[in-house]
Length: 225
Picture 1 (cartoon, rainbow, N blue to C red):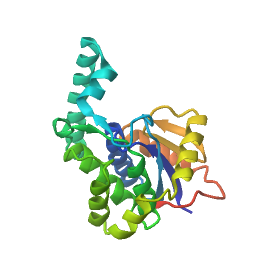
Picture 2 (cartoon, one colour):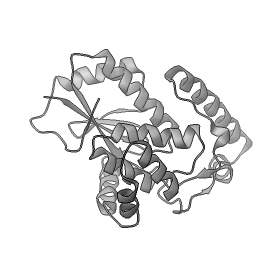
Picture 3 (cartoon, rainbow, N blue to C red):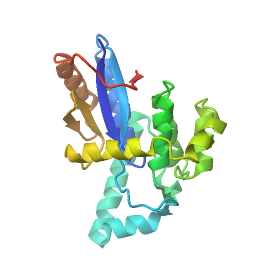
């Protein structure tokens, strides 16, 4: 029986892209385990309007003071270096909009149903953090859908509807009730196990420990890695 890991993350969270790469590296460190990932939606700021906001204004309001700006710059520098180590090409200077990520999460949800969840996550992270594209924009989402070989016409119809909206809202509410306030968070057996973009070695230890306590049932809609 495969070990199922639920990864709770946001597509506008740079640590989540690092976390995904490190989780994959961790899986490679435990080749005797079969691991499946379920990607779970989590909006760090669900109050962002559907059309998004100016990225620089948003960051200015978030970090405020000069000390906060220095902290933001230091974090960005650290992320850039961590990205180089993980093959993640952060290009923060290209980002002009802070998007609402909800529809991007819906796209991942649909892709996951077609065993393309990982491809969708990677393509959306790349579109936002490497290419500076607005992943709240429908045209961007349709381009990502085409890139991972989902039918853009079907995706366009889904985006124009409220398909799976309530499900993802309830999912996020559940994780907040579980005490999740930051991402990435990795869950096994519906218990919070690891939070943050931990090293591949620590995540590998987590995978081994979780495998020793496999449940008799597992969540649906997984992506095998």
